[in-house]
Length: 403
Image 1 (cartoon, rainbow, N blue to C red):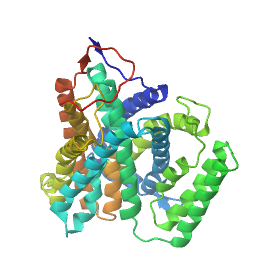
Image 2: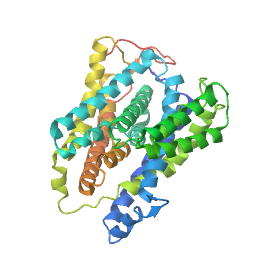
Image 3: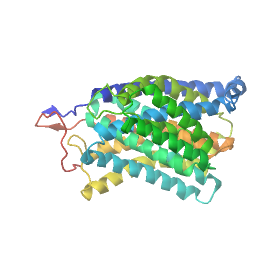
Image 4: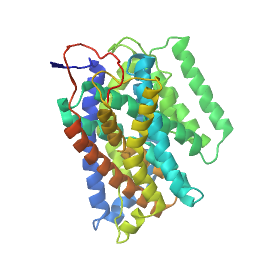
């Protein structure tokens, strides 16, 4: 009897390891930010992020510029998954795609059912998101106690989830749009795409320079500027060969992992998690918006991911990998409820200028993400053991779902 293991690419292993350590640093920065915000230095600490530099506050520079780098990395990861990762073959891609749809729609419906027609209806996108760094960080703590393919499934699910969040941001969180600037951004995007497809230009600095120009136009267009990071990712030349590190896309993705994990996201946490926990914090968590966020992340995520995957498997649309059972999918769904970074990001867009609502929403995100992480870890520790088979194989074939 041997444990089936899926051959993981070196690129994926590096990505998984960096997300694990990055998640630990993210937790540390969050704790530091919370402690400072609720200390005698709280007013000064929070005031730092509102200092204006070059026409924007430091907080805006973090959320609009630094996070564009994060979205660039997300775009490069999504591109890799589509070319030679878990999403490159339809039979492999369908399960995480269907799971991501369920994990997006059910939490959104839960929040909408509680907040429809109210000022907090705009928070519908908050429980849709999954934080890759934290979710994979928790899964990494379990090591070999969970199947290798569960790590791949959760990564693909989280990447597709982030794509959904990006679409939501672009479509629903754009206040006023300037078509002139948006057209200029589109023209830069088209030019970069032509540099790749027709001129075969391989210089990363040229693409980054064009991406910076596109970011400026996108910022002025009204569409959130971070979208420029995703668009830029899809213009950079890519090699479809497995673990080929010679292409500009591979090189840039490899280069960005550590800066994003150890600089960008920690600074984002410091800038956005300075929540003042006042005497009425329990009442804030009892609001329909907070309840919608917590219920969506803690219950909506695992229910949506598991039920839609079950339905798709029953209809023959997709199948489980040989070494996974539905208990593993449910465990991944629980970890999908760790919204954190993306949920906080969407909160800032949903409730611009509404400090109290933003504060309450962030507290709800913390409570939900912490709960989802702990419950998901315990569930997989108890029920997540890899499946034993009589045959030792190198890669996982897809068979009929087992319960």
